[in-house]
Length: 457
Image 1 (tube, one colour):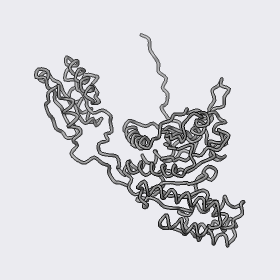
Image 2 (cartoon, helix red, strand yellow):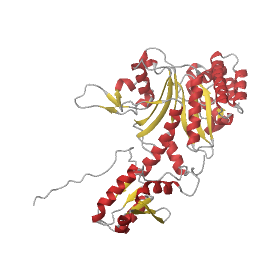
Image 3 (tube, helix red, strand yellow):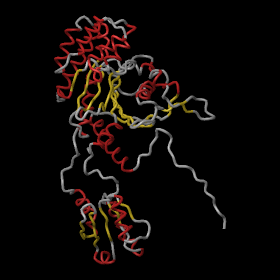
Image 4 (cartoon, one colour):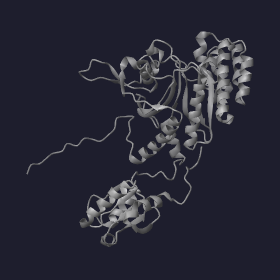
């Protein structure tokens, strides 16, 4: 006898990576399916791009801090310098530049993994799924408004009730600095300081600006603007009065006013929207309206973020191509929905609906034929593969949380029937074999309660 020696390989994952087991994948697929349904309803089409991009495609697009996190890849015999994609926006810009035949505006969505060499920590991984929806090829802020409609509908469809879309405009931010009289060399520090308003409050922002030696009069004028709050239209009117002499800021205010009017026409409640003059996003990236969505009850932070970026595609096309879009935080949404039990009770932890048991080896053929009939009837079936007692088979189904099991014993073969056991309820019925698929579908659909999630946020 030849002895085969097996060298054991320690099973472990690279840092920052994870396995997604079936129950987690089922939840993930559910969320992605809801999101894709909304995208499709608004005319967005799916796009796929390769995990690997040319090194020069990615470099110079994100800023030095971000580019330290890009994974460089190289085949030993390859001549091209390659890198794993860092996000989905730069690949989109490359696609638009390469495929001039695409109709404009081009509505696309992409839901795919991206890779970042971040320091692994709780809730932050080096490989994660990003979900983007963008409109390329139109400078109309109607496109920005449509992106906001999509965001509101996605979150509503997933069961989030208490969320707010925070709105600002890069042009207003530029105007704030000019209005306050802050020197150009101090604008970066100014933006970083006001972005902390929600965390440290006005006194904290004032102290931060003082540390950066911003002139006292500039601080006073700026803080007066940051205190503006209330109804979105009233906030914009107040900003318009203060920034009357700043042409770029007035242009940004007019864009937000048009977005508000468009969302009113589309039926998006004003209570969903908030103008936030202190919100700062992607200073090197965004050129117009910027937005993020936050859940406030309970306070769990932002779930989406995006804005207008009219220069990114131009880096590949050689001319400015307007674009706007959002990233929907699929990973964060999954985390929140799981913590607050927001998945519908109809979402089971297994894709299998029926376990077809094998009563005894001689009846395996009957079980296999029954399973094929149930599959043809639209049910997802698993057949027991190894000899074991009926009790063990049913115990296996319960452990897998398969909702139903069918039994075909000698008596059922003789009478042309099957036993159907509803394992979640502990009930049993005998039905005609020809009607088994329809009976099981109806029985499983009747779960004894309304379809819906747990706690809505």
